[in-house]
Length: 145
Image (cartoon, rainbow, N blue to C red):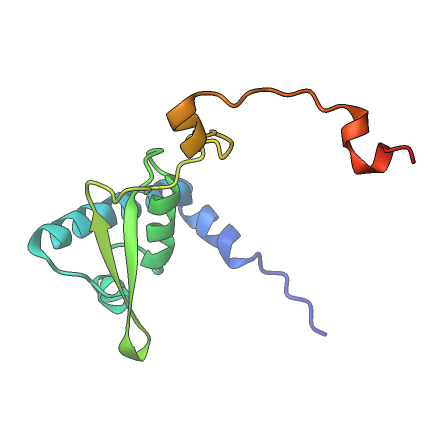
């Protein structure tokens, strides 16, 4: 196997462009994409993945930028972006502002407890149930014969 002494592509790019910052480029592309989705939602249009890629403004993979916006990576705001599956493998994207109920899912979102007891029909009509002490003799396992 031949050994290649040339540095990898990423190192070459960083040497030729020392001011290049991938994270800031992705952030800018995500915010441009967010503004585009806001305008499309206002017009009632749902852009497809191919249409977003053809514009060549939102990076090579705009779907990754959409995922970043959903997870709140850039400005710590989670956006409600719906993926609409269409025939022939086409995916369209719709931004919901204001967000739908239950969206966006936040890490700090409070969850209602499942153990909140609701009064049943007896307690609604008669109040609390009377507390009775069960004796060991009342239980069939402990009856002495």
